[in-house]
Image (cartoon, protein in one colour):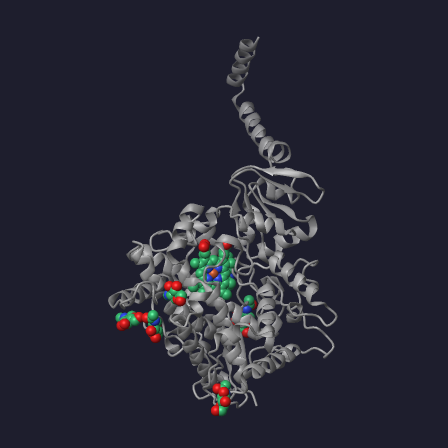
Length: 582
Ligand code: HEM
Ligand SMILES: *[C@@H]1O[C@H](CO)[C@@H](O)[C@H](O)[C@H]1NC(C)=O
Ligand SMILES: *[C@@H]1O[C@H](CO)[C@@H](O)[C@H](O)[C@H]1NC(C)=O
Ligand SMILES: *[C@@H]1O[C@H](CO)[C@@H](O)[C@H](O)[C@H]1NC(C)=O
Ligand SMILES: *[C@@H]1O[C@H](CO)[C@@H](O)[C@H](O)[C@H]1NC(C)=O
Ligand SMILES: *[C@@H]1O[C@H](CO)[C@@H](O)[C@H](O)[C@H]1NC(C)=O
Ligand SMILES: *[C@@H]1O[C@H](CO)[C@@H](O)[C@H](O)[C@H]1NC(C)=O
């Protein structure tokens, strides 16, 4: 019976080859377009668009076109906590359980991260996928990054941060407040391609209205210089880091980093096509960065300071002691330099921008009041607040930082993990779905930070939500903050959380404290049309996605956050004017 069937089947095929081909193709299509997605796929009951179930194209193409975060966010608003992203990937939101299961309980990282390897694909702590390997790396360096090490008076880190912040305060004074040394380097198109709109024909952009003081400066570049100087000194030793704050002419390396960072899609998702996608300019920038790094590292290795056991050890030395030499150590350093300078600069830029919006001027005033209560007024223009412990504990300053990292998260993009043993998710309907091993799963910090039940008016920048409300009991306040913190992941969450968080946090707090202790800031009106609101109106939220750039003329349009794995201001710039406090 069966044999007969097979034989007649063969006969049919040999007589009708074309029809057979059609049947086979049709069969395949029916399988991939209907049978698999609707009947067999373990993700078949998870809500989301049909096209996400049958192909990776939507996910990849939207990331390439910088609109993926918005799409996933909208999917969550429409379909609820669990949505399908591609045939093998889902996004989860809405419950702390997800954050806990994925990140605190530590599912391994997905292949996305593997491509953050450097120096000929050498592994590092951020790029390592497996938990055991990651832990081995983490043990080598983690004590250097702990809060107590960073705050310890025996160590260099606090001196590094105080020294660099002092240089920042001075750079703002000379380039903006007094206008003695206008920051030409950031206004010249050759150094800042996105700043090209700003040089007037006669080259006098800075004083286009006859101004000689309180000149507009691009704080995005300036903060990148601060962050680069801090992170490189931290990694390599106080004497061996960069000195971009002191030498604006060296800041071209920041532009090179930005140029390469704009390849993030190809770097992380299409590494094989990187070479094809990279323009000559990107390749040159990439080469320049490599040269620059190798010089920096070589300099640090030339003259290794003598350490007593475990004292003032740098990351470089800690890695070498653990047997990671040359490029194997450099891969860690390079990752930190990439991970650490851009993210920090973005946070500081958006924070100062928010404070500079006319409607938010009251926030500056309240911050200054808090600073003056704690430290008095500066005695001289070069006074630097260096009391890390007090700065770290100022409630209003902390509220501003928290709110900024919630709304303007430097890394709002998904943090993908892989299900390593069958994992059950509950849909809005109450139905439970078991995800097989290998399913990619992620939370989207952008959406986690915008859950309306936890953060009412989620898109508004409201530092007060981190402080006790007037009618609120201390108990309720504590409970509320605890919940809010559970849903914050600006530095990730759990075991793979940002290692540099304590460096970045105190660096940012000290920078903001010192800047607003000395100065107040305004959006530079030569740069854009500054949006004003009636005093009883809350300013508009700053949107995500280039689509929102509108006429690209107002500050709100120019500060649109680019929808990529890491955000940036639309045109890679933010021009503020600084005035000395009286
Ligand atoms: C405001 C500044 C920063 C932000 C917003 C930030 C954000 C993050 C995030 C979100 C992650 C986790 C990614 C994931 O799990 O998918 C991460 C990891 C990491 N960050 Fe940062 N970062 C900042 C500054 C720094 C600095 C200054 C350093 C180095 C000194 C650094 C070093 C690292 C390292 C080594 C990891 C990997 C940790 C691990 O896998 O164990 N970051 N960062
Ligand atoms: C660490 O470095 C600082 C600043 O260079 C120095 O004053 C201190 O003595 C060093 N600590 C130890 C324990 O060597
Ligand atoms: C916005 O305008 C500036 C000039 O003011 C221009 O250089 C820039 O390319 C524009 N950006 C976008 C995204 O249109
Ligand atoms: C590197 O830093 C150490 C101190 O941490 C210093 O002694 C040494 O001179 C520096 N090396 C170079 C080449 O600058
Ligand atoms: C965002 O990502 C896209 C796609 O990879 C890239 O073309 C673009 O330059 C990126 N933008 C920024 C500001 O990094
Ligand atoms: C800094 O200080 C802490 C405790 O005082 C110590 O354990 C650590 O190894 C020191 N070194 C560095 C570079 O943090
Ligand atoms: C300013 O000088 C006074 C008097 O010498 C001193 O008490 C105060 O601590 C100084 N303030 C700062 C911020 O250094």
